[in-house]
Length: 89
Image (cartoon, rainbow, N blue to C red):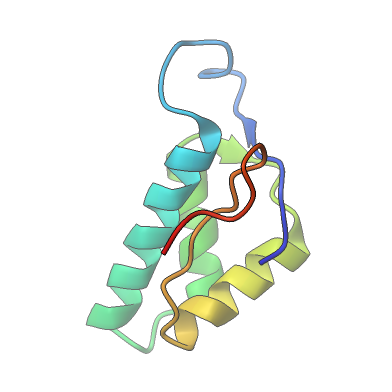
């Protein structure tokens, strides 16, 4: 999986809360669930919506496309931890 740096929207940036990677993982999981429930959804667009609704912006388009492809292929997709390498199984 490509590494990506997430940026939080100014409204939430700087506030204490979950790490951006954790929030992005929630968006990925929600997108995967939505795709499982309805395989006709636009996974790329749904992922953008899920990220945006959680205050994440400036996502690398290549990462987004690769992540959406992994979701469509049924892989359990994890956000790579920037400090520790890829997340566990």
